[in-house]
Length: 242
Image (cartoon, rainbow, N blue to C red):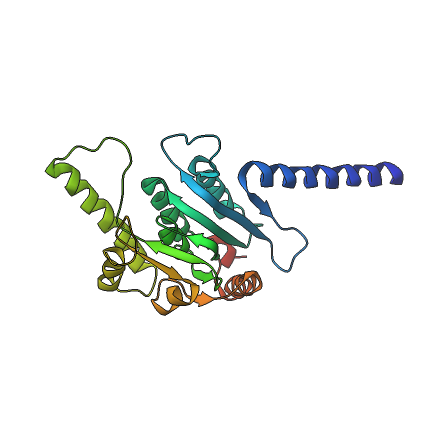
């Protein structure tokens, strides 16, 4: 009987490991098990894919994978925190902003870490967490909203761009320390990018500008997440009654 129980436990462990591998391969996510606090790791890499399927050679993060994953993390009481690793060139504006709004609205303690790049719509994604970090070698690009494909040259199109840009600016400024005026200056800079408006800033400048909270690496982000977990109140009302 004891041998059968041991065999069942081994099979369960193997199944759990296989599930972790599958999650990493298919969605870039993993939940730690043997750790101080149970945290979930979510990666946003390559290009954020939204309403249109990108070519197969593109490295993408699909928003239809990320959104239900965030819902699952928020309602799973065993998961104590969420760390979001970003290395993205940007992508679909509405999809990226929708993901950022979901993260900002979570009760689960969240920390973001920008490695490589957090460009374009990656900026709102980076600031959406309760605490944000960036490595010194990473860069972030702040620029106006752009659109590919056929664009009608009518006032309504310009109005749409203005409103979308205002949505992004309002979100970034309300979730970071940068002022709307400074964010607009960085966005509308014409003296830095050869073929575009905008500004590229490195990790140190991102912190100095107030976009990102702190310079740091993975261990700093994990330590900050542990601290958030240990100092945050109950996520659910019934937890205070127990």
